[in-house]
Length: 188
Image (spheres, rainbow, N blue to C red):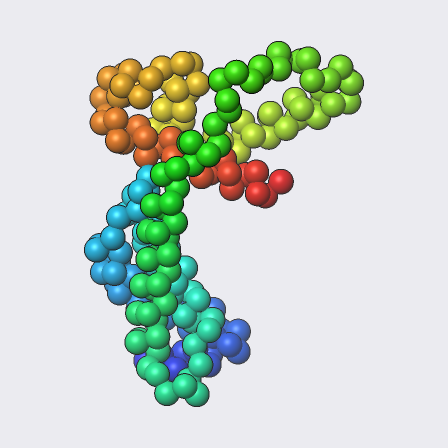
């Protein structure tokens, strides 16, 4: 497709998926180049590239040719800002364990002591089945293995030995699991 970026934007706004695909393919290397320079705490390179692609989509959606700025310049700004926002948010997440933990003195209710209502018990089983199915489909083999080992009570160091992976890889896998679980909670 040989057209200017601005004419591709006009085509996209007219509903052309082909123009959108062509523009994304054209700027994917720009996103990858921008992503190379950054690191997200608890994330990997794919997470940064994903953020950059979100920035590219925002650029396509919000570009205004009337402003006199070439699309390439606008796209670079949007991609960089999106990546930087994600990097900053990742840095803030380092305090999540401290902010979301339970006090040691607080008693944890025994399983089944919360309700005796058969309807609630059935709904709880269905919810657990749905969560299990979602996690089985959403998690990579490594993430599933690390989660299973962690839920069995193993420490990061023990999981690291068991999987022959670094402790940081274990931490990253568990962070990805948390993000995917949080995504599930937001969907429900």
